[in-house]
Structures are given as structure tokens and as C-alpha cells.
Amino acid sequence: MMNDKYYYNNLINPLSMKSIPTKRFTKSTTLLFMFFAAVSLLSSCASYDKIPYFQDLSRQQITSENISNYNMLTIQPEDRISISVNSVNPEAAAVFNNNVPNAGTTSDNPVYGYVVDKKGEVNLPLVGIVKVAGLTTDQVSAQLQQQLTAYLNRPTVSVRVVNFKVAVLGDVMRPNIYHSESERLTVTEALSLAGDLNITAKRDDIILVREIEGKRTYIPIDLTSKKIFESPYFYLRSNDLIFVQPSKEKLSTINTGYQKASLIISALSLLAISISLFTN
Image (cartoon, rainbow, N blue to C red; front, top):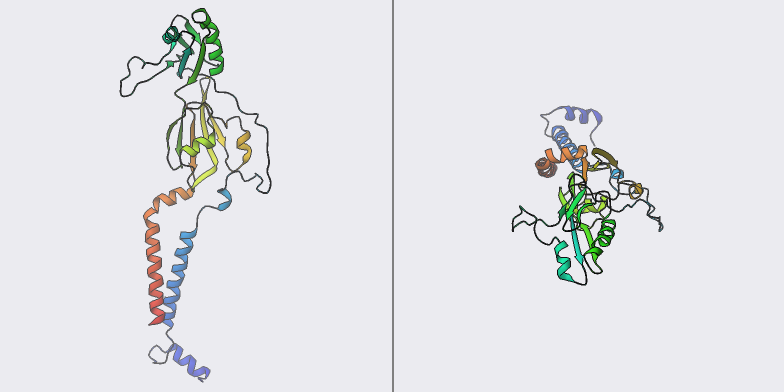
């Protein structure tokens, strides 16, 4: 067994054949440190507590609540509405049906329906000018059904908005303009159409942009709380815009899209070099 003096002399003597390979040990340690640092960098991401939706919703028991924030969609200027009329005499009712393309449209891209003008009115055959803005489709149907009794025998009227659309932008999988055949579209449904939020999106920093009576309103939305279901803005209106704010991790993801692959390759290379140094 070596004494302390012999061990010390050989340790600091790089020419000694029996010296301990301190340089190799230091280099290997450095490479290992770099490897674990790279792995740590790759594994770092957004804090998990900011990712789940509806965090204040109980997961241990069934809960329920009354829906009190839903209001039926009302027709607005520049909306396009479909009016379908039936009666005992279908031929007489056909004059009121707008089942032909509007003037100026092509056969490849026909546009059906009555366009509500800036005054909130539409012009129907025989009936004339009808005020529809601010009314629900059910209200317009009932109003027209009463007016058409002067021309038709037991008429039935169906009205719906045919250009209902919302835009979803920002940190989602498929940002786009989405059309809906239903008048009942929610924030969560619109985001689902867009493929859901990306993992780098800020779920507590979403902006709903809505035009209300000539004013543009910016409404903050927080998807991490179940209170979104109680919000008066949970149900969307036509032409709403949803913007999903990206987090700082998004910029890192974009800038280092290729760098991550390089880091993985570098980390594996460092590991291979380290193993080689220890085994040789």
C-alpha cells in the first residue's frame, strides 16, 4: 500500500507512469456535466400548473350548475339569413324562398340568403322592408309567419343565420376562420375546431374581440378556471375573434426547433465520448 508521500508525489507528477489520470478525469467530469446540463435544458418547459384547464373544478365528485348565461343569437347588420317558407300551396310559397344565388355570385361559389343591410333590414317579395336586426331567428320567423298569412294559407317560416363565423388566431394548432351551421357556438368549441391550444399557449391570457353596437371590445378569458362556463362571453357571436397569447416558451420553441435536435445529438455524442474516455 502506497504511503501518503508516494501517493502525493505521483499525483502531481504528470511524467509518472503510475500517476492518476487527473486530466482525463477532469475532462470526463466536464463532459458529463455538459451532458446533464443539455438534458436538463431539453426537459425544461412551461410550468405544469399553468397547463391544465378548469383547475378549480372538482375532480373527486360530480358537480352541476344551472346555465344562466346563454342568450340566443340576435341578427346583426351584414348578417346573411336564410328564409324558408312553406304553406298548403308550395308554389305560392316559393316566391318567398331565397333558394337561388344572390346577384353577382358565380355558380362555383353561390351565395344564398338575404343580406341584412346597415339599417338592420331585409327586403322580401310582397312583404317589403322587414326590420330583423336585434331579433332572434325565432322572433323573425314568428313575425314573418304572421305577415305572410295575408298571402299564404297556413304558412310556416324557418329563419337561420347562414354566415356565422369566428376567427381563431395565435398559439393554436390550426388558426383559421371557422364557419358554423349552428347559432350556438362556445369558446371551447371554437378552440376545439382550431385543434386546441398548443402546449406553449397561455391558457390564462386569451382575448376575445367582439364588435358591439359600433364599438370594438376586448374581453380577457381564463381557461384555467371553470368560471369561463359562467361568463356572458362563453357563447360566441358571429364575427368574434379569439386570440390565444403565446408564452415565452413559444419563442424558444420556434427559435430552437432545429436546435433541440442538435442538442439531442450533441448530448448523445457527449455521452458516447464520456463512455469512451472511461473505458479506454
